[in-house]
Amino acid sequence: MTAETSSGTDADLRAGVIAVQGNVSEHAAAIKRAAFENGFSVIVEQIRQAGVVPNCDLLLLPGGESTTISRLLKREGIDAEIKQHVAAGKPILATCAGLIVSSSDAKDDRVTTLDILDVTVDRNAFGRQKDSFEAPLSIDGIDDPETPFPAVFIRAPLIDAIGDDVSVLAWWDENPVAVRQGPVLATSFHPELTPDDRLHRLAFFAEEIITDSPVHPETDV
Amino acid sequence: MATETDLSELKRGTELIKRGFAKMQKGGVIMDVVTKEQARVAEDTGAVAVMALEAVPADIRKRGGVARMPDPTNVVEIIDEVSIPVMGKARIGHHTEAQILESLGVDMIDESEVLTPADDEYHIEKTSFTSPFVCGARNLPEALRRINEGAAMIRTKGEAGTGDVNQAVYHQRTMMNQIRTIEGLNYQEREKWAREHGAPRDLVHEAAEMGRLPVVNFAAGGIATPADAALMMHHGCDGIFVGSGIFGAEDPEKMGSAIVEAVNNWDDPDALAEIATGVGKGMKGQSNDSIPEEERLQGRGV
Image (cartoon, rainbow over all chains, first blue to last red; front, side, top):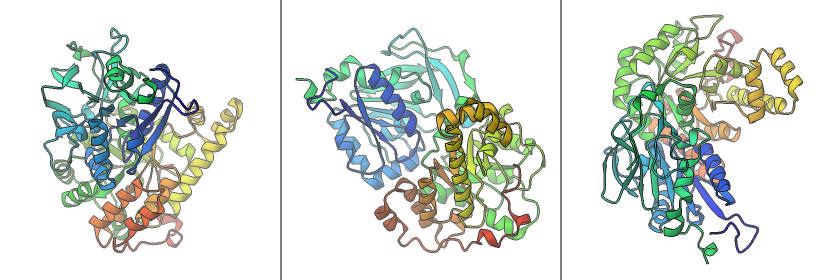
């Protein structure tokens, strides 16, 4: 892939941050940095209504409250668009509440999940806010793997079962906390809260993502 | 296979975690609740969190007397009832009420002017807590003083329990205006501004460089309708607290859902028209200018 587009003036990539509720601006800043470091220019859309997702090459589903996010995704009709995005093989990074919303089952009828990631989760299983923590994490596939990733867990969900097609990229206390299934990368922690954007780069710019699912088909020729 | 990480390096209650929690509330509506039944309604209508208190501000105004932290029995019932975060109100300067709320498992503590202040001179030293705090403010120096004491989130004070959005608008406009002012000042001028306004100088520089408050900033105090909530988003708030406006409304469920949806669609008048249709009457309320100065809550704890 090159950083040039056929039109020359447009950005190489259009990134969509699902913005119905949650930690949106930090993800928007992180994807801009990650794209820049990988030689891409990017336009970032904050998505609160239907009709924008289909134009996006990649998506970010931030943390927030999974009950609120799932309710608004459904009301606005964004839920079906995200499923189509993933079915087309286009990448998405889902964090914390985003992981819950992406899962096949959150074991809670207050949350309607998108079922784009074959895991079941326990919401807030790491405890209440006073149990929230930060810790250095080792993550498979990130750049400079010897340097631990500063992971921030806030009322984090626990992944308690994973499907055969899901690979685990990071563990915490014998629990999977970063997983990948095809174009979907999901974490129970918040990679957007620190300036370290290695996880955003892994989600969208790792070699196999670009070759397996071209994010920008017209530049691939 | 990813390697195991060293569990001994875990940290809790850091500034990053406290402010991070507040950031997860962005774009959301936090609703005042008195009982677990109200908490259930709030969660079902799409609230990002509930605020537990012993009576909603409009009722505190009516009944008078001393307003204190909520009964721990109620707090525990509310925590058990809902899966969303539960916040609780403590009196200004009441270190011990805050400690009790933290011990009960409350996710964020609101050191609130709506309750009767326990200390006329000092706020709680919030940096010593593991739990994050939210505090009210009417302007930028007040907000920065609270952040300096450890607040991880700021909300406008507005004039609670009135159903009149007038003061929330005034406080938010003041905050934005002052941020624009310090953005335009050079280093020396910002130092002088900080001295003259009794604002912590490091935070004045930080806010000026960021062009916003260094923590999440919500609107609160008098928001009673979907249009009020959308107006506060229009004025640049990160999210909304609704106090008496939900359970003082004719139909709390409809009002709750409509306010949640209005915050997401704050810049789309057609969507707002649809959302605001058929929600029933809002709380009756009391206009801000009919309240004598000594009965206003916003002057507490500056």
